[in-house]
Image (tube, rainbow, N blue to C red; front, top):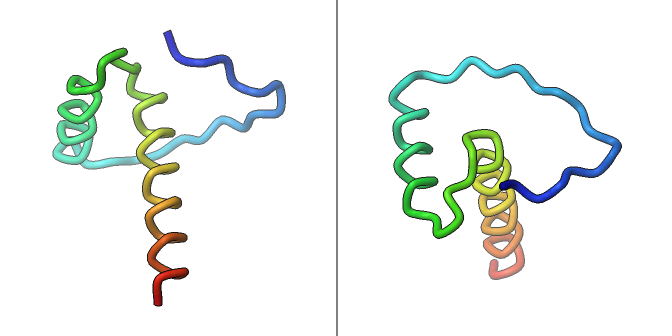
Length: 59
């Protein structure tokens, strides 16, 4: 079960190639709590943003 989202949310519609969905699906299946696709995408975006921030501070 994904964690509860804040009350202030926005719906985002995306067009994504099926090959990318397959990669995200593979990633989420390796997670211990098996997040749904939306939660997996949220987590991956957060991981990407954190990695980008860390890379900027290491320059």
